[in-house]
Length: 301
Image (cartoon, rainbow, N blue to C red; front, side, top):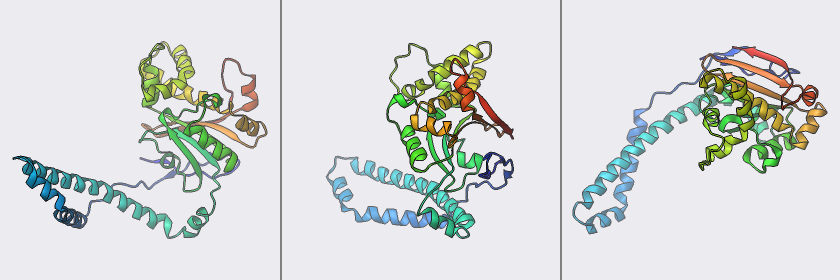
């Protein structure tokens, strides 16, 4: 699947529309590694005398159960090695592609990071920002949560506003980008909730922060199907998060002084299209009913 590559960090950081051609796939497992792992694990079992003593002292049938447990554990270990050997091979490939030629770059990153972007994205496994936008190490400070929501300043401490504080006040990022996406399960959960829903759930307690976006989406798309309403809310919730960013005094001050720009982005992973827009601060202050004014809209696929 072709995806947009890393864009240049110019006055318009989203100017590049070129596509990257390399996507890492799964490497074939190496049989030799499994044989070695099997031997090491089995030897460790044989050396553990506690298992033998416990089996001999147990009731009839216990030894057979324990042996079966050993076998199952051994199979589980091999399966786990299958997964992690694949990850190991990918890491080696990344080092081959980047590490050798960029060793000076990584040595500098070890001393200091100066990312231009703070990215708030969904935790969904299908929409990794580095894959979608081609961010390289050191280019973007990221936080990912369910439905890419930004809580208000008044909501109190969370990992999201802690990351915002560090990115804006310590790293001095120049751009905050909130990225939503198609088929978002968090937004679907939000849209499925009833107003009087009292069921205790970490997910519901989190996504309820997007309640205003849900209300607007249902009002604007009331004549559409539920799936289409969810799509509408996926985009509305991004704008809702952009407004919530302005509730942080140190963010609004920097935006007002043109030291910081706030952007929204929407990725449709089905057709690989990406929409981006920038919050117009002065225009937004003139808007009513919690709307935002947007500028510099870009669409690429």
